[in-house]
Image 1 (cartoon, rainbow, N blue to C red):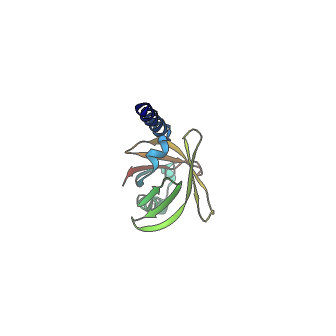
Image 2: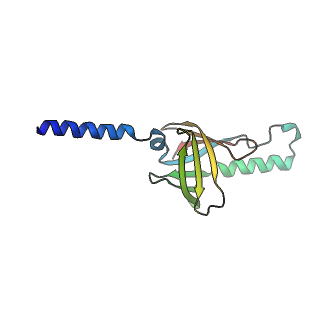
Image 3: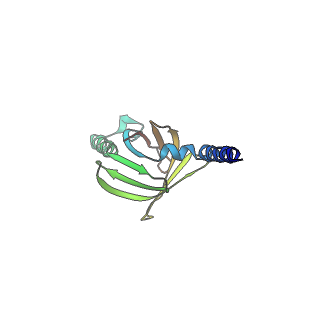
Amino acid sequence: MKNYLLFISCCCIVLLISCQNKTKNYLVKKWDCVQVDNLAPIDKNFISKEDSVKAFQAEAALKTLSWTFNNDNTYYCSTLGNTLTVHGTYEITDGDKTLTLTPDSKNSINTYSITSLSEIEMTLTSNDTRVPLILHFRPH
């Protein structure tokens, strides 16, 4: 009888572990932005030097971005590795295809399509901009 209860307990533990959300398991860690796509206008023939410099500066700033996602559905966003800029809550919806970030200030809600997510990479596509911004992350 004791072995039977032990077997049932082990089965329940395995079942609970296997039922955890894989997307959330992959997401929960610190991520550093390593690449940004679609920041500059699509038609580069009409981009001015000033716009080009601004796009370069924006890309450099985005590449200092780090997001930390926690198990309790909170997140922290920092730049340059130490300055806390935004914190709030996140939600994974649409069959693990959409990530919604709501800052504590509630002044803007950002929604991203989860293009890819694994233990070693995360790619998000913004849903809130005219030209979708694509952010590539690697674990910290």
